[in-house]
Image 1 (cartoon, helix red, strand yellow):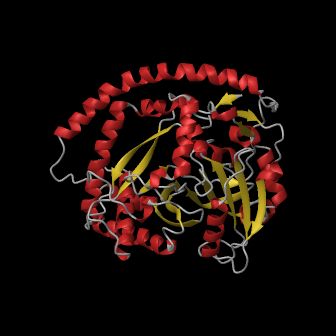
Image 2 (cartoon, helix red, strand yellow):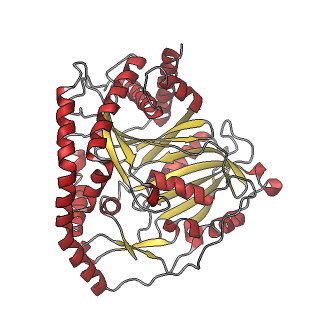
Image 3 (tube, one colour):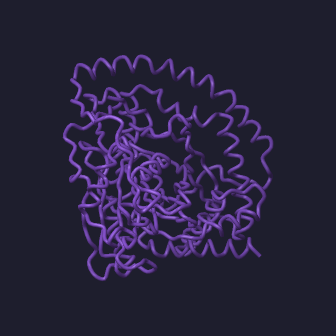
Length: 473
């Protein structure tokens, strides 16, 4: 039995019916590479069953502490059933990209069962008319609660279910799996009492370590700020800062990774992530301008930062902090926008390094569990975040992936996408994945806030082309 961290528990506490806090991955496979050119559902079940020991979240479920007096605990589910989690569906004819996006959005919108291990997998057939795919392709949508994994550990879970070769086999488990019985109310009460007494002392220690460098970095940035650094003092409100409905939309587009790397050379020191942020700034500018809603001030994004250390590789849960970044959507020139995004991210990274991303993450562990749970549930159920002054307009998370082909039950992965968690106050989520020479920008949004996701995908592509033409010349 292992307790959820404060950050992991927050994803449980913040979940509501209209804003579930799981993430999803959509992978598309070419089954012609599999032995016999065919992958069966029975074969997929057998493959997953042989790999359950490679990722902890497969068979772990949460046990809540009575009355929410402390963070929940993970236990090995004694009632685990693989067939409950892996399901098989098909698109109706003709089976095109739009149908796949709609079905994916519907499946992603449904909350997970918090009484079971926090994942589901849908094998989707019938992709006959999805442009650019080989004949006979199928998709796999995997939903996983954010309390169980972050982006980096999600990549590790992908590694657990995939091979580098067509006929790859998983290593056998080092020891047999042992389910756990649920702890008694008395045991949980004793644990919660001890934890709630200890946490304030830990908070004082972390604050004493993080505060001095944070103050120094803030003062340095304040005195050295460029005159043309026009990040707004207050984030303007847009359609993406309201209450989210329970309905989701999904869309995606992809580009050659080599093109992104070529663009970044235009600005010395620029990273792939800076280029993506500049593209997102341009796409959101186009979208809101089309709807005559573009504010004069720049839009902003929250960009997660992994704090996972080498000794935490292979562990579940969240090891993540983040920074707020101006997207400079008020800048029409794409290269100037990229230069300004680069300066902004450098400033944000300097503050993060000074404080220590690890310390920023540790702060979430220090609030007593009862207080943290009550605060999280209160904020979520009252919709407070959608009524406060906005902190950002979107989340942009960039997850580097393998640059070699992966295989699932012998089928070659030909495309990969991701879906995030739109929430009250920030209803648009950009997930960026790189795989085998391509980089994919996927968006998840509230259908009420973005009823035209395919148009927004066009805006992303137009923003990319505009930046490429201006930067690579």
